[in-house]
Amino acid sequence: MLDPCPAEPDCTFTGMRAGHLSPGSDGLVALPQFPFPIAASRRERGAAERIAQRARNAYEFLGDALGVTPQLTLRVLGRADWHEHADAPIYGVTHVTQGGHLVVGAEPADAWRSVSRHLSRHLTSRALARLIDVHGADAAVPGGPSLDRLAETLIAHELAHVMAEQAGVAFPRAWLREAFANYALVAVLGETDPAGLLLVGSLAEAAATLDDGMPTLAQFEARFGRMDVVQSVLAELAITRGAYAAYASAGTAPLARLFAVFRGGSPRRGVECALAGMLASRVHPAIAAIPALFRPSPRMGLAA
Image 1 (spheres, rainbow, N blue to C red):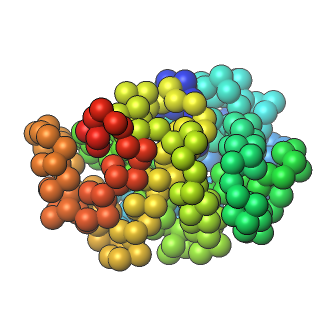
Image 2: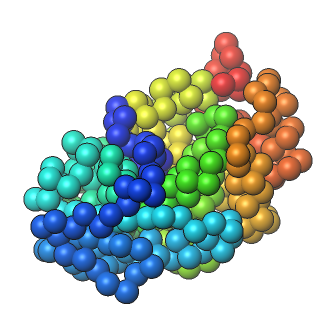
């Protein structure tokens, strides 16, 4: 998940069941004219409408591309309403509640500041300047890029997770699960929001120059959901580069194939070379090559 979410077990997409999808807008305001129920903090209606429109774009585009229609309710919460209506304790961490609501913050999670600070300290001056030119400067992080607009684009990533779980898609590796969601993000932005794709692509390109903080694939698999913020985001950006390469080469077709291959249960687990071969032949070579984008492990190579 691109949403920085270290050590947060609530940042998983479990428990999204149709019987639990009531609006649940107590103390919140409903946003009409969307294809799914939306409840928002009263003081955050502007942000909620922007995020809801992004969710609708993803909902409609991915529904057409994958041939499924998810059941969804969305809550967009300000800080004052977070603890009453969200399950995750940290503000802004996107998650699905026990009641089945997809919850996002009206403001980006505070952890994005840590990512901006890392970039300001470790990117070259030239790379940092290019990034700030695209994203703007973060007023709270001297010399760092503002990642607020990028954070708002990530609803497509989160919705892709919801759709995969509801459709019974079972990925055998965490990196594959994230590759699907990041591919969905790239495709949705590429087709509906080129400016948003520029935000994601520029950050992924800049992160490709960083070794400090990048985990090995084995570390990513073993510690997924419990990683340091910076490690998690750098790994996600590496996965995004692979997804972007597949999208640039073949559009949305590999996304649909990736969805179909693992729907209804994953193929039998085997050695990584067998998995890579299957992905290269049945999905796209750029997806099969994603493990090589992680920091190499001296003992385990690319094995997960």
